[in-house]
Length: 284
Image (cartoon, rainbow, N blue to C red):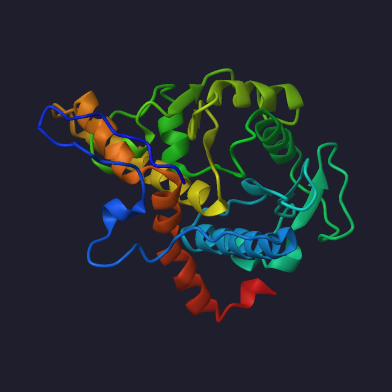
């Protein structure tokens, strides 16, 4: 990863010589969770699918599995133009690597994955995002209580705490809700709203969506987006005046914590917990 220089200095005098990366969060020794690299695309696929299944287990433990709604997808490193996604109607807490479905851009179910139906709206949303954003590898979407509640306002999250600064100038609101997104045109509109650099979308009257260069990054962003909606709703309900973080401090915080490597690292404690709780059962 090529470091990117942060603003020279914030209004508080912070930020000189700061570059993006997980090294900002570690002292004494290097960060414990660098993103691995692979020379063999088949080895990379194995790693990706294990982390995709792990992401579903984390989402299940957090209560994110709601009926047939919700999906996480990841691009396949072996066959460009295809991606992996969860089967329709299986609880996130039960998903294993062998349950994951491999599909192409026409939703043909490929032979090397599970032979199962996928969510039609999920396909419409994910295929459009993967086509529009060559820089991202994964997308997450679900209908959760705080995201659904906050989405009804049709507005972006405010920079009211350190954690939400991960989404500073990288969030959008998709306002053109047209019902269940089985029409691929709505998926294309969501991808357009997300733009070239967005990592989070609040889908008005619908739910939340995040993307990332790894499934770990996308999943970490999703859990943070849902909790940020919760925090915003609580702050709004208090009726008290909120102190908004200044733009320069929000950007400084983003550059320290919101890069792909740092967000990948944020997800690893949850992934490791799932490995321990299940004895690696989801890797099968």
